[in-house]
Amino acid sequence: MPYSVEPLSPELAFGKIVRGLTSRDIAHEEVREALRRHWIEDGLVLFRDGEVSEQFQLDLSRIFGPLEAHPVKEIQTEGKPELITLTSEPDDVTILEIDGEIGGGFLGWHTDLVYVDRINHGGVLRALKTSSRGGVTGFIDQIDCYSCLPDDLKDRIEGLDVVYQLGPFTRFQYMTRSSLRIIQEAPSARGALDRVDTDFPPVAHPLVYAQPETGRKVLNLSPFFALHINGMDSEESDALLRRLSDHVLDSPAYHHSWALDEMILWDNWRMLHCVSQIPLDETRVMQRTTIKGDYALGRKLAA
Image (cartoon, rainbow, N blue to C red; front, side, top):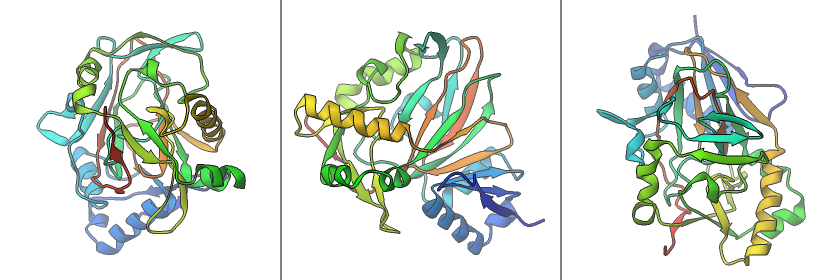
């Protein structure tokens, strides 16, 4: 039976569902080209009812570009640096209190690797072990976000850059509206945080850029990891970032509750994502590829 393609949701301007895709299908260049087109035009592709394995995840990912090792070595998969393993477990998880509820594994709205100057182009994510609740991955399309901005705000942010840097949760105030208190950093995260000054200097990325293939403009803001607008005084920068972040958080989103027989591909140059927390006594394991790329607009700043 041939694979099929359908909209992710009639209420969303982004996303497709591909059902029944197998290794036999992706051996054909016309299929690979169609998948690349969905990636660029739709931003997110959910694969269901098809082949799911580590090797298929790697083969599928390579359709969209060469793979690269994630720069945070603590999450690289042993023997396969092109795969990262994201584990939330009782003995190694960042513990947060969010709106009075304590849990682990939370990540606010962000672009992957926005804290380096070369942002990867995307990835394919799958679940190896799911939690009984939480662990939901959300996605927001920043092409849609930009199109919904008022014209005066579009004019105001043109040409501006945002400064980002890796760091603890306490540094970042725009990624969620929830009340957030950090209780404990994950032991595995401490190594990367200890290397911030040497390995992860501050970087700047433009607030707006045009998708090269289509010319559509992207609101290029990662609320998580954002520090301030480059060259703007702190009060004005904070007010503008809060206004833009509120706009992003109010935008239409897709929230995915994971099963073990599916994968998600997204374009990291336009799609934000987040993860909700899970119970502290449970384990959640995800694996993700990193599709190499550089939109050539980021730059390192002096620390």
